[in-house]
Length: 190
Image 1: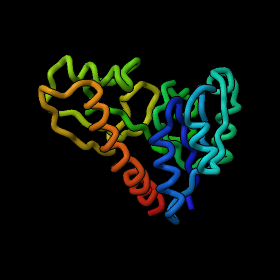
Image 2 (image 1 turned 30 degrees about the vertical axis):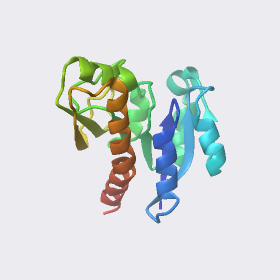
Image 3 (image 1 turned 135 degrees about the vertical axis):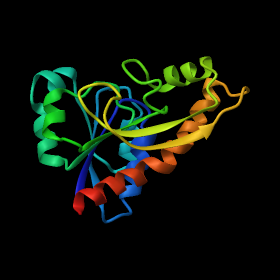
């Protein structure tokens, strides 16, 4: 059984969905959730699910090896579920093609530093896109530039607002993210 470590920065709905999904499989289990925001709602979600959630700071993440060492002990695969910091090169190097992120747009559009959450949905609306979606991709040293694993699309119409776009994206995230993670893990096992 593979061990998953999830990174989250905010409300934690994707992290919660992943934990619940893998609580009912023999493929993998979430061994740890790591969070860089002491006010994030993910702490309450983890408490309710009896999942470990650890707060860390930028020094432990980037300058020291605290988080890298923890990952080496507890992770076969790393999932970014609404995590906003760029992953340090030393962690990317230690886990090649074993760090997966979800992005709330169809990359390569609307990716890069600062493009997350409502920032993405507002940009999609401003550019009058007829569709948007999610991209699940491997993580490299640059924001949103790793190899794409999976994309799912949803149609947009002129009445859509950034808020309704966010709702459509959330549905796709909840439906696909855990299943695609499981597919990647099963491929690793082969």
